[in-house]
Image 1: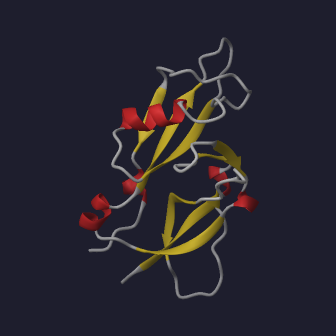
Image 2: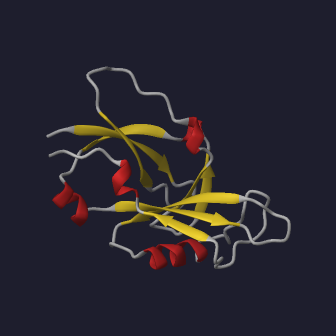
Length: 150
């Protein structure tokens, strides 16, 4: 079976520490070295699927881990993630934040958004304004970001 490396983070909630895999992956190469972290994705804002707390992660808090590459059919039956881009609606704020929602249940984009807006503590933009069920939201299902086996 083909393998890939995916970025993972550990939930920062001390009562949880759940390991969350994210939809950034590369095929496993025949090397002992870890690939560099793609710095453009940081800070990562992740909602933990177990405790529902959100945290921002830096590159030093993320690591690569090895997973099997699933076929397209298997992938539809297995957990994935949603990426939600949320624009702040506070006056004169142009902040756009990207949030990662682990999906173990086959959520629709509206359900992923509900999970985000019910996270603890309340989600905020980069400047600290509360994000309240904004109408300026874009949901990305990242299956197309992952390599596929035939």
